[in-house]
Amino acid sequence: MNILGISAYYHDSSACLFQDGKLVFACEEEKFTGVKHDSRFPKKTIEHILSNYADEIDLICYYEDPKLKLKRAIKHNLLSVPRIWWNNIQLKYELSKICKNVFYSTHHDSHLMYSYYTSPFNEATLLSVDGVGEEETLKLVQVKDGEFITKETLIYPHSLGLLYSAITAYLGFKPNEGEYKVMGLASYGNPSKYYKKFDELINCDTLKVNMNYFSWDKSDKVMFNHNLIELLGDNRLPEETITQRHKNIAAALQYTYEKALFGLLHKYPGKNLCLSGGCAYNGTANGKIKSTTSYKNIWIPVAPSDAGSCIGACLNYLKQSVTDDTPFLGPSYDGFDMDCGGAKPLDIDFIAKELNEGKVIGWFDGRIEFGARALGHRSILANPTLPGMQDRINKLIKKREMFRPFAPMVTKSAQSTYFNSTDFVPYMNQVVKVKEEYKDKLKAVTHVDGTARIQTVYDKKSKIYHLLKAFEKQSGFPILLNTSFNIKDKTMVLTPEQALRTFWDTDMDILVINNKMYFK
Image (tube, rainbow, N blue to C red; front, side, top):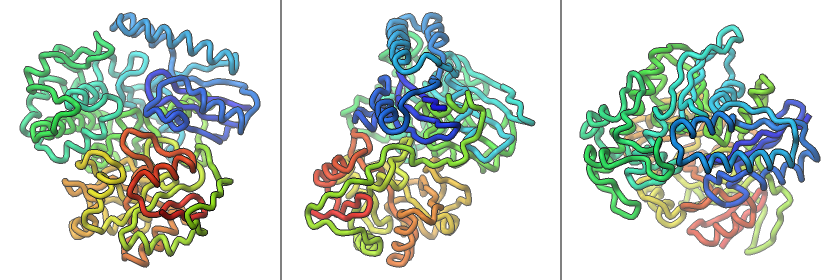
């Protein structure tokens, strides 16, 4: 049985395929189109599925209920009704061309089922936090003895996710895209300067937002109003310089989000937590859950935002666990073989030596990752111990804001040696403390507050694991700086041709594509 999962028409459209209950493919539409956070119906992703995996589809699982979404728009924001109504018409037409049998999940159930059925837990607390679904903006469920018990929901317009997005917009970044920049910026600020003013914006006990300061329930384009400017001062425009005031506001936002999140988790104590929704990308908060609440085991899937909900919708229908939870679910280009520029067969020991000497490597291997993080198949790699490496990659390769940190990938066996973490963190979704004695030695991956967003590498059969071990022989550290293979405002490279073009257009030194090395 071929089941096609689809998420579309908000942000991060995606599609996946289950064959006889096994997940065989998943990819975001943006990776095919090159449009960041592409929200359109995922035509190209579905075309790839139908061309390579299935001639016909037996069932479609859609990630939310379009009728309930339209009802919310009619109830709260009439200006959004034409857009949602038209999207629903388009959706019905596109689905009818593929298959007549459609299962409509609900937005937060898709998030929750994705996190739960990919987790190792039988009993757990499931929490989904994002901007908005049909009408719910947060949902907490406890699973016990096979029963799913809803404990708490938050109803639009009250929303932790939209609060974070609104302040993201206030700080001059793009909502639904720039939140991770604000999280990184927060580490440079002092929350005490503004956190009391944030008490005016949200009640962290009830999670109710003071809508006198915001307009997301009245406008499709503007998220805040003049009252917020009177409270916090003038908003920053995208081209304006980032000042210490902006950093302090970001810090106060992060402090407030954590206060609200941890307060909610204190109300429903437990041992195992499955976290999902777009807010589950907040690695700074995620990394503090164990030390701040009763939860000792945390699971966050590889794509907790709307992209992953194409999988979640299918799992909500199937009611079964994913046994092989690999993030490498997209297209591969194993047949690519171009002899140019003195290409040579891959030599991992040679690459490790070049990394140790300061070379920056583009790394392209096998199937592309599902989700927003590069996990070793579409990565830019560098030596995390060299002074100036972070600035070099930000300025000359990624061509992005200088304040943004880079993440380390580390072998599982060495993780606790260098970082205050023993957790299984394969998807780079928790920010943890770098141990004091290694902060100066791992400068390129240590943020200004002494933290790092780690990725645990545990697959001893993978090329990236062997590269880490080879680099350890050269440098003494089984750790590499790892960032996604793209430049600012571009999507992660999908094809070898895109990898070569990015390689030639940036300051990278060597490019690896599958089993070959390319040089300038």
